[in-house]
Length: 365
Ligand SMILES: Cc1cc2nc3c(=O)[nH]c(=O)nc-3n(C[C@H](O)[C@H](O)[C@H](O)COP(=O)(O)OP(=O)(O)OC[C@H]3O[C@@H](n4cnc5c(N)ncnc54)[C@H](O)[C@@H]3O)c2cc1C
Image 1 (cartoon, rainbow, N blue to C red):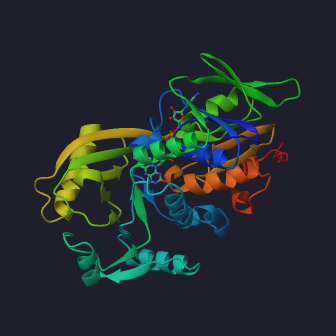
Image 2 (tube, helix red, strand yellow):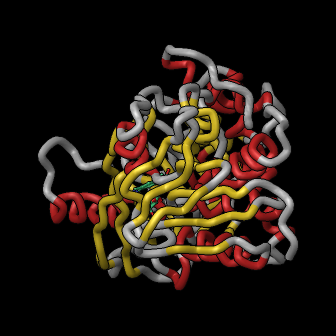
Image 3 (cartoon, rainbow, N blue to C red):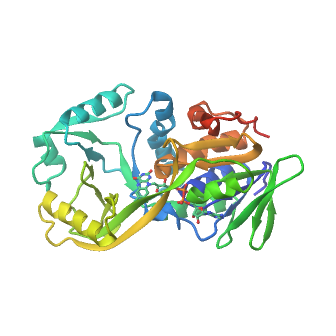
C-alpha cells in the first residue's frame, strides 16, 4: 500500500492504541504500534468492557462518550464482523428509585433510547432475577465486547492497512529535537523516528510524559474482574446495581466487575461477589469462581479523557482515558482526523490537557 501521510508511532497496544493505529493507518499514516508486552496485556485484558453512555456529567463532557455506540456500529461494518460485540442491552438500578427516574429523564433529553421499566417487565427481561426492584433503567442499545479479541481484530485490521506492530519492546523515553519537537521514541532495540508520537500507554503514560517535562494528571486506579463458571443464560442482560455488575461472557462464563472494599483481600472479594450472585439469581447454586484479576486503569484526575496535542510538545498526541473500551472507536476516528487530516474535532474540545491549566495546544503540525 502506498502511504502519503505522516509517520506516526503509537505507544501502547491496548484497545485505545489499537484503535488509533487502525484509524490512523486507514487515514494514510505510516503507523508503528509499539507495546512493551503484547496487545491487550494492560487494563484492556481485564476489562468488564461494557459499552454504554455518559451519566451525570455536563453535556460538553458527555458528548464524545455519547457518540461511542454509533462509532462501534460503524467499526463493526468496517471490520466485516471481526469485532466480538454482544448487543444484549443493559438493565441498571440503584437503591433509590428516583435515581433511576432521573437517569431516564437525563438520557431521554438528548434522544437516547432508555426506558424506565417496572418490576413485572424487569422479570421478563431478566427471568432469573430474585426480587426485581420496583423500577430499573433499560438501555436496549448497549452491549459488551471481548476486549482481547476486539483489540486483536483492530491490530490485525491496522496491519492490513500497512501498520507495523513491535511487541515486547518498551519505550524507555521520548526524544526531543533542538526545536522542542518529539523526534521519536527510544526502544530497547533502538530509536524509531516519527513525525507524530501518540501516547496511548494507559497507566504507563504519565511516566513517559514526566520524562519530557509534561505533567499528565493520570493515576493508576485498580479495578477487579471476576470470572465464574455458570449455567448458560443465567444472566440475560448486562446487569448493574449498587452491589454488582455482571454479564455473560463468551462460552457461557459470567464476568463481574467489582471494587475492593477498604483492606479487602482478593479471596474475600471473590466470596462476596459469588454470594451476591447466588442471592440475586435463581439457579446460581452451581456458579463457581474461576479467577480474580486486578487491572490498572489509567484515570485522569477529573475522570474525563485526555485527548489531543500536548501544549508543550506540538507533535505529541495524548490519548489517555477512562472508559477506554467505550471511547476507543470514537477517539480513534476523531484523533486520526486531527493528526492526519488537520481537522480539529469540536467533540474533543472538553478533552484537552489544557483544561488542567497551562497553555492550550499548538495547532497540529
Ligand atoms: C475490572 C475493570 C472493569 C472495567 N470496565 C470497563 C467498562 O465496562 N467499560 C469501559 O469502557 N472501561 C472499563 N474499564 C476501563 C478500561 O478497561 C480501560 O479504560 C481501557 O482498557 C484502557 O485502555 P488503554 O488502551 O488506554 O490502556 P491499556 O489497556 O492499559 O493499554 C496500555 C498499553 O500500553 C503499554 N505500555 C505501557 N507503558 C509502555 C511503554 N513505556 N512502552 C510501550 N508500551 C507501554 C502496556 O503494555 C499496555 O498494553 C475497566 C477496567 C477494569 C480493570
